[in-house]
Every structure is written in structure tokens, then in C-alpha cells.
Length: 91
Image (cartoon, rainbow, N blue to C red; front, side, top):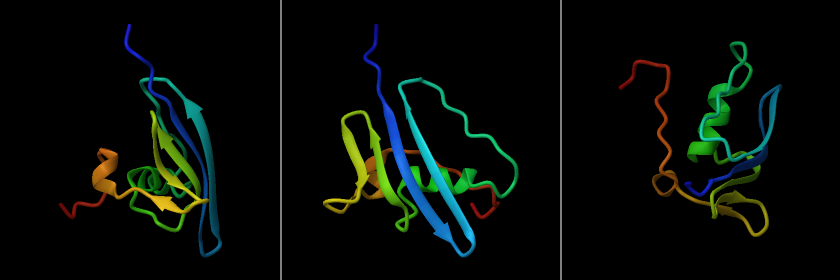
């Protein structure tokens, strides 16, 4: 049996009048983020990938802390090994 890896995040990010609060702690091998357009799904994925520096809170995966407030730490995207493909056809 494989060791379970835990995804644990609790963060908040504001953009103008929009505020996203997201919290999850799970060792499931599959996680889906669903919701209507404009609900923050892409923003949540960008925080997990390390592309949103304005998020306040923590992001942890396995034994690694990717982001935390005190002391301030934000691991760069290339150390997180998270794949993210935006919806736009800019690639």
C-alpha cells in the first residue's frame, strides 16, 4: 500500500470586490474543484501552483510547506511540481 500524501490549504485572496476563501485537508488521490463561472476555481489552482503571491494563508503538500504567513515563505512554482494549463489559448 502506498503512503498517502496530504494536500492541506487554507487561504484567502482578494481582487477588487471579489474575495475567495478556500480551505481543504485531504489525502484523496483525486480532487475536483467545481463551481460556476467566476467562483474562483482558476484562482484557487493558481494559488496552489504558486502563481498568486497575494494569497494569505498556507498551502502544504505532503511534508512540504509551499506557502505560509509566519515566517513568510512562498516556494517558487518550479519547486511545487504542479501542472497548470490556463483556459486561454495563449500557448
